[in-house]
Length: 172
Image (cartoon, rainbow, N blue to C red):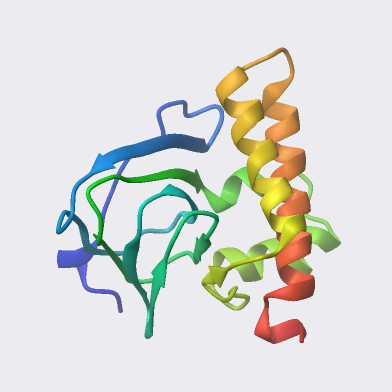
């Protein structure tokens, strides 16, 4: 059972679109995001500065261009190692990916992802396909052009496919 003292509950800003994307910037050296966990799948895309991250039992440093996957229910912590840390956060409620009709995709990939039977390696560097997906998600979300919700959801599905093929220990 997960420790409720480290549980972080943050509601989605739009309950009809269970994706929350925001920028963290001007994070100073030594500032941190406390050790916590939540049900959401998260991606951090680092734009500026350096940071130390701990995800589960993995510890690593990140720099501009690094992408970090934080799996659902994974205990994690971040500390800025510079005075100008900037990164984007993509936070996804796993149920956002489900459809009303239970199908092969839901039973084979999405439900196991939501329940941690599928998990991704945390640190992604020098993967142009993943980087293109993440930047497309950010561009669509921040521009909010007509149909951006569809574009974001489609890109999230594409990102999951790339991660399954390259970064999931269960499938490699």
